[in-house]
Length: 90
Image 1 (cartoon, rainbow, N blue to C red):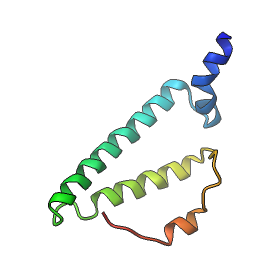
Image 2: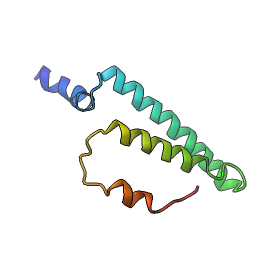
Image 3: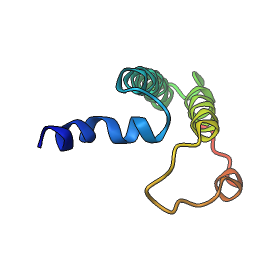
Image 4: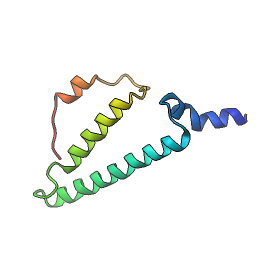
């Protein structure tokens, strides 16, 4: 039972070639970037002349980084070409 509990925490990081600690750091980095993008989008909603492309630019950069990392996806998401065909600015 101990091994199956451990695998809950390590199977995904192992699949992307990281230790649990490495993966924690990367995930927390994304969390901080998403929080900052969320704050920018919130301010932009109130004051549309501020942070015009901040949130969308941050998300595009994170997506490009995640795509390069090539983590296997559990879903059958559309290809990058399909997603890139629509360009939104928040």
